[in-house]
Length: 315
Image (cartoon, rainbow, N blue to C red):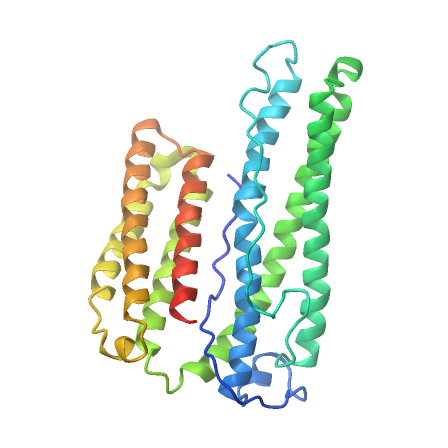
C-alpha cells in the first residue's frame, strides 16, 4: 500500500486585526519567534491551506494507484471480458476556500526565504498533480479505444509506468513541502498559543490528530499482512480510545466563553466515529489477513473530517 497521509502540523489561525511588518532578517523557525499574533495567524492560515491541498489529493491518487494495479493485470489478459471491470473512476473534487488567501500566493507574514520556497514548491506540486491527471487521462483513452488490441498492451504498460512515476514524484514533493509546513507552523503556533485561553483544547486535538495519522500509517505500511502488525495496531487503537475519552471530558468553560464549545464537541464526536470505523476495519482485517485500499480510504476520509472539525474550532 502506498502512503497517502502525512502527519502535518495542522494549526490554529486566530483572527486578529493588527498587522505587523514582515521580519525577513532571520531564517527558519527563528524568523517567527518575534512575530505578532496577527502575523503568526496569517502564516497558520496559509499553512492550513497547504495541508488541506495535500490531504484532499489523497483519495484521488490512492484510487488511481489501485486502478493501475487492475489495469496492469488486465493488460496481460485483455481478451477477458471482465479484465478492467474493477477500475473505478477517480474523483478529483476541488476544495472550497472562502478565504482570500490562496496556496499559490504565500502570505507576506512569511519570511522572504520561505515565501520563495513555497512559491516554487507549490507551483511544482501543482504542475505534477496536473501531470498525474493528464497521464491518467491518456491511459483511460487508451483503454476506451481498446488500443491494446493493436500493440499488445505496449503503450498501456508505458502509460501505467508514467502515471506511477508522476504520483511517486508528487509524494516526494509533498514530503519536502510538509516538512517546511511543520517548521513554520509550529513556530507560529507557539506565538499564538502563548497566552491563549484555548491552548489546552488545541493541544489535545492536535495530539489526537497526530495519533490518528500515525495509526493510519501503521495500517498502510503493513496492511498487506495484517497479522504482523495487529498487536501494534491494537496498541495504537487502545491509546487513541483512552485519549478520546479523556479529552472529550475536558472542562469546556473557556471554550464556551469563546463560543467554541459546540465545535469542540463536534471534533470529539467525529473522533468517536473514527474509532468505531477503525474497530470494524481491524476486526475484518484480522479475519481476512489483510486490509484493502478502500479500508484505508475510509479511514483517510475520517481523518479529513477531523481536520475540518479542527479548522472549524479555530475559525
